[in-house]
Image (cartoon, rainbow over the protein chains, first blue to last red):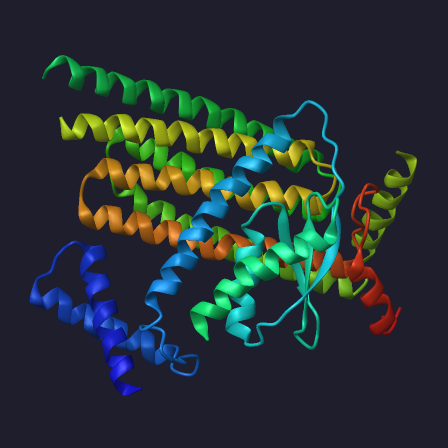
Amino acid sequence: MNNMVFLMNLLLAAAWGAVTGSFTPLNLIFGFILSSIALFLIREQIAFRDYFQRGGKVLILAGSFFKELVLSSWRVLMIVIKPKIKLHPGIIAVPLSVSEDFEITLLANMVTLTPGTLSVDVSEDRKVLFVHCLNVPDPEETIDGIKNGFERQILEAFR
Amino acid sequence: MNGFEAFAADFLYACVSIALFILGLTFLLIVYRIIKGPTLPDRIVGLDLLVVVAIGLIATVGVGSSYTLYIDISLALGLVGFLATVAFARFILNRGQAKDFIIMQEIKDSEKQEEQK
Amino acid sequence: MMSAVISILTGIMLIIGAIFAAGAALGINRLPDVYTRMHAASKAGTLGSGLMVLALGLYSQQWDDFMRAVATVCFFLLTAPVSAHLIARAAYVVGYKPCKETKLDELSVIKKSTEPEAPQ
């Protein structure tokens, strides 16, 4: 656990060096101090498990996320420039199998940036995510898409 | 400077001009929605998009003047815009749950307009 | 030679970003209600301005500026869905109705059955 925090601190210091554009020892030490302050501020939210071993899965998740973002923007653009807009929007309930707050947040953010869906609310007991869809000819299909797409990938990456 | 490099410089100049023109039109469209927007959330969505497009405009101006400090300015504007949107959303939530008179009136008006369509 | 190729790439990215931003603005003018407008604003707008900031980072041809542009884009991608979600939730809880074409609304059923009437 402590090793993980120290590794994170070193990585953040390296990121500071990359962002400020100089890798002089003095600047790296300053970045180390800054990142230790940042880690101290979020000390209660830190919950590393074996994230670093799962790096590949996380990268696949990020890649598919970018692809879906470009696709969804393209689809919205296509809907908007059509001369006559014919839509069937609706709010559907998606049962969740991810349970932790962090995973729900990640899933809701990804759902918002993917084609035709926008997360509106989470039920009180954190079991159902309410999603507003631009076009729902078939609600079951959309629910299946979310559950078999991002939710499965998140479970694979973080469990 | 050979021919290809001269072409690239001209192409970049033309692209920056076209992008600035499109962004100007975009601002007009968004301002139209903010002025007309029948309800308060519509206006807030418009203001949010206005900040996002302003970030794009700053980046375009940065390319046009080749002054890369504009990246930091756009990052700062993104931060401020996000906080402003969060504050607006909290405002709607609090005022609506307190049954604010103007917001309730607006909801009734929008329902009436929906039925007339 | 290298900088000429980067200039052309930058120009193309600027134009595509501007077109996406214009599409988002057209979307919030043409779509029927606040929830569908949010779709256009949060997706196309984020991608458009993100592309433009990346274009500036690429054009600077320096690692630190490029990394800062990437950090900015990551920040947009994290915050745009959060703000869209907040506005949508606030609008729904307060009672702004979705437009008439909305076919099904499973949230309204649950809200009515579980939430006690707010004090007048």
